[in-house]
Length: 151
Image (tube, rainbow, N blue to C red):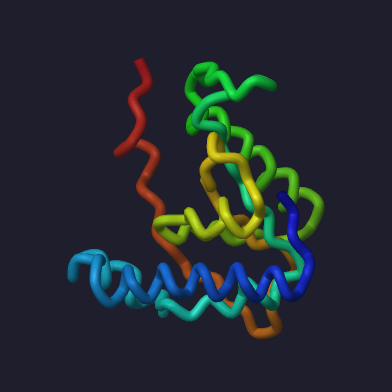
């Protein structure tokens, strides 16, 4: 679901920041809080209002027919993860930048965006042009040989 409405983006930001404050203040272990500290990550998510587009990606836990009968979905998270990766690649190819945001839990999105009871928020993708003075952190990636085997 693509969102550009300013009032709805504000509500999404408020919901995300409430979850983030709860996480940072009560649920996150110290080790987790220390890991992203050099990036300046905190509960402030103003980018959710500033970006021109937010794309809320959902997966179906199960399908529902017209009578409300459930039908199993096979590998919904894996399938949606692959589709989200392809979407990110296409957006980058189109010349816009993206930021993946995954407040946990994301149930507020299900409600706010009127999704069905069989759907669950998977990812909030922030889309637009980079902000003036934006700094992209130089995150060191694992060397290929440490995470891949060629047989």
